[in-house]
Length: 240
Ligand SMILES: [Zn+2]
Image 1 (cartoon, helix red, strand yellow):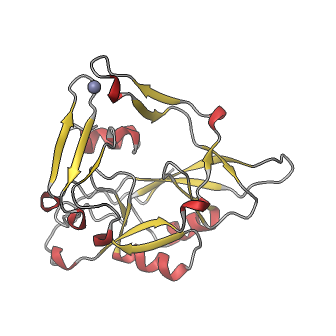
Image 2: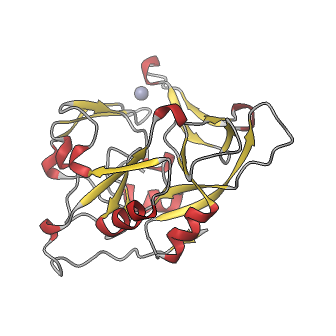
């Protein structure tokens, strides 16, 4: 299902772009991350005929299936692969507050070592809001393979990965090349913080946990977003 499409670009400056504050939503603790139910999932494997080192997992070809350690899941749940899952009441909260920049897809879940307990209903949140690629972040392509599209980026200034002028105004948004990270508008951060949902923490975007000069290889945007949206955003940038 599609939630609150507010896709038109926010015309700046209706507010001075530079006064916006942005936030990052992270998991509360890696020890609570949940595992994929691997036998139920199929993942594209990308093999590069030019360079065996470019071999990697690509898109998920099936919907998400996870294994929960018990029936008492946090309000917000993360997988080891950094997918963001929420319980029903959190999705209702997101909808009631008209938070934009995401779609939700039901997740198939089971509880470890039992078939009698019913797991809570979970939704995978896919971020569709977009913050582009910030010129001030010092992003460089350090490796790029024309054969398999493998790309490795370095980020000189991780504290500056958001350029408010490129932000589409969504409450949940992604910046490139950091699709694993869920960035939030000030409004979304305030609402979610006040909600006291368990399983997440919210920090200023400037405190992004990446070292200056760190490298990432996120694959293509279509690995992280619904394909149509990925093509619309990533096509012009050659990252769809
Ligand atoms: Zn390659």
